[in-house]
Length: 91
Image (tube, rainbow, N blue to C red; front, side):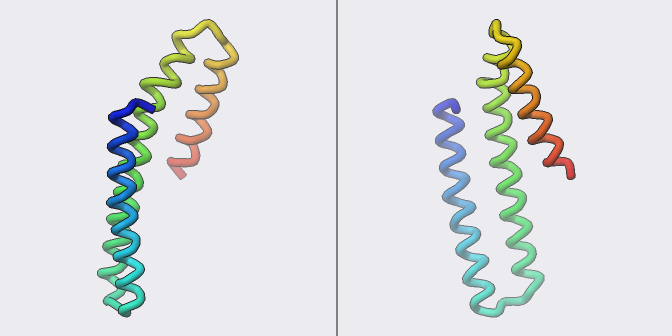
């Protein structure tokens, strides 16, 4: 993972962690259900953004390295990984 991606991912994770703690507090305080659901949706969106950041970095580094390298096995492995991850993502 590139250093700038790692820094951004760690920052996003800290923010998401705070959001999840906030949702827990809302549930404990018996807050209005729709308000809780909206916060859950915000966390899901934040996680989706984090996922995209990490996938983009993976494609720019690991996948690119495998595709430009000499190993056919590495290329197949990286393509198979992406197909598996992206296939699950669409469901």
